[in-house]
Length: 316
Image (cartoon, rainbow, N blue to C red; front, side, top):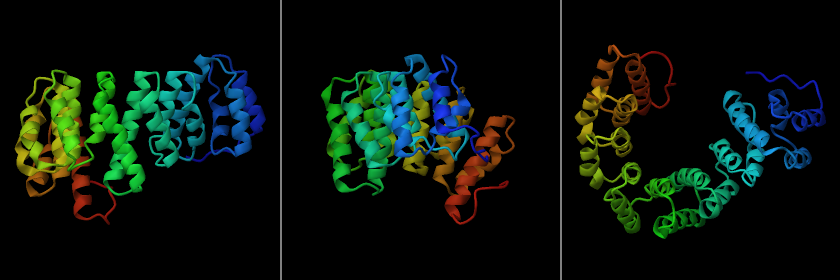
């Protein structure tokens, strides 16, 4: 999508934002993309005087714009918004930085996980830190940052002070640290708890751990009465990549829950191999459109894994 050059000055757009009342001036928000340091300072001055409700609406609108128009880049704005007084703004800022892999953002997320007054924001921060835990696992972080991510997540998991929503996300992030005895014990403790959210988090962590030792637990939970847990179990099979539970995934194609069915199809695409390919091709003729589309995408992933130089496009 081509972006037209603004017909008004940056200052005029700032004034539109400042004087907008309760209505978000979407066209003016384009001016906040890729700002110079000078313009960033001007924006921050205006922002501090906006009504909280308008700040919440603008933060949400910036997220939407960034998704809809890939040329727009609001990272510096979102980093600034991480310090907003409104929890909803801080949470939206974390969402907006989802693809940012900078150490600056990681440092902010770690601090927010440890001390943000909003449990909802800490949960989002934990999810964000989990993304960096994945980068640590695949060798894309320096060792000092790997240690900091791991140690912060471990400290939060052991603190006993977090609400279950936050603890769940912390455990999920820890799952990426395989061959760590402390992590294994934390996953086991969560799995053996009476809380379905913690159990779901433990299962996701098992998948991310990519350790075959968890297969009995994952296989058992594929028939759990809670669709959230079945969903996590199906996803975990795909994460681990074990064909041992292939037919259990196929059985989930008939699950009553749509998300569970789609997770099973995705997981089968991750497993690969002739049997997985055959099962997915059969789904191409399924009467359910959602399953046909999911099978098509899974087969594309499978084909890409076999021949990564071939673009993921066209029909299978």
